[in-house]
Image 1 (cartoon, rainbow, N blue to C red):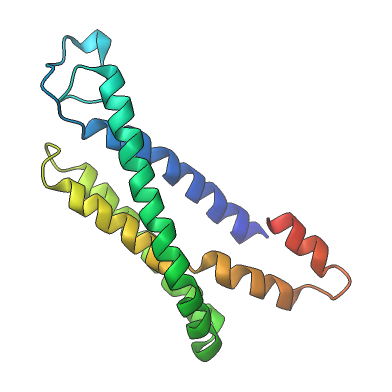
Image 2 (image 1 turned 45 degrees about the horizontal axis):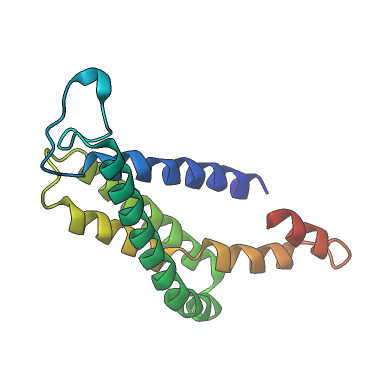
Length: 157
């Protein structure tokens, strides 16, 4: 359970990076006033607009990621049955790593232009390769004793 807990912490921390980054990409006609009233974006001075556009963008991106995961999950499960669970789990971790490295590179670009599609690619890649939940539960069921299997699956939820 320690690797699961560690990956869960990394995932939660990564999810908390989406909001501030997406707020920083919002552009509008209202110029930022001063540094004390920072709205979250260096390109827009309207705080309400920044928050609403960033939350809408995050909703679309997370929805796309979950939809891609819904289609790729069964394919990754079949792949795990054919190749084994460990290679597919490593593929999922590699995809997660590459997606967040790309996310980090995109955040280092100057200006918001051109990075919208790169952010969408990060979310798509993360959704397409996230086999952790598909593989982890079956691995957990395999390594736990029949009497304690339900308890192990309960604590992993």
